[in-house]
Image 1 (cartoon, rainbow over the protein chains, first blue to last red):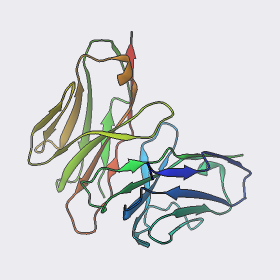
Image 2: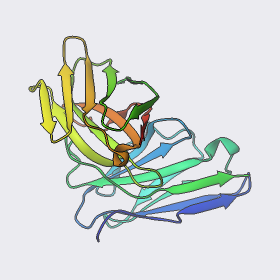
Image 3: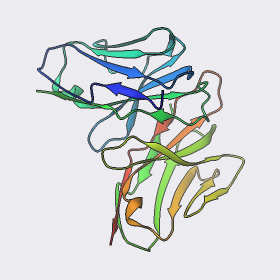
Length: 115
Length: 114
């Protein structure tokens, strides 16, 4: 595709509900990253996929957060029993091979608001 | 893990003046330092990067300098223009097997006054 696509762009949910955020990386990119951007904060690393495997899940804030990637392409970040502190922009990025000195291509993000 | 600190958090400059953002990192093994720019409502984009075997790199009006001894690197924007207004993030990573993630600073909001 032309770039990394994320959906929805905005999500408003009630506390306690589950949400799913979707990321469609650039075609052919093997590496996919999820970051969280809270107001006034930097980019907090959540999880990294190389293909369909997630070698490092240490950035996930709690066991309410999970992610999967299928077919080496689309990834879904799921937040269960959402809390107000989960409100943030969730950014997805992809890179060609996942090398640390590779350019990351970011999506536009999903603005999550938990009421 | 790596800890990247970025200063200042906000920076206001007059159009035409220079802007400097400084980042420090904690892990001496870090060897790759990119800078991302995020304009309001848009996605972050890589604007320049530097590797530890280089002390300075320039690209038109932007430059990055690296001081490995002091473990800090800086972004310099000269002759600032309104389109330079954005949030700038520095980051650091190291060449260790399976260590692929960038550690980002908290960001600097740059405002260029006309």
